[in-house]
Image (cartoon, rainbow, N blue to C red; front, side, top):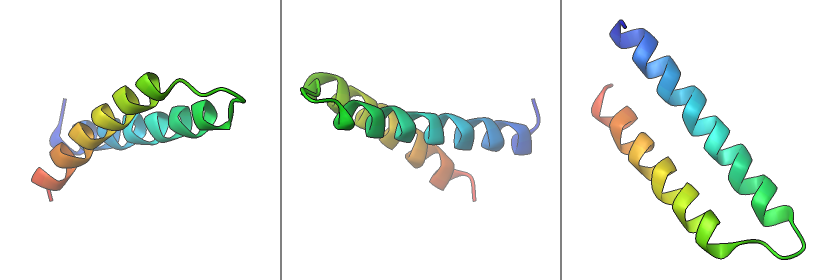
Length: 53
């Protein structure tokens, strides 16, 4: 996979995680543990994206 393809894949995953966080927080009784795990994964991806300008 090219570097550009990798970055595009990371951006897509980052957006998917953001969507999952929004969906979970909108529930009447959100699972805080799940939200925390999603945010942690999203941060890892953000760090990787920032590493590749």
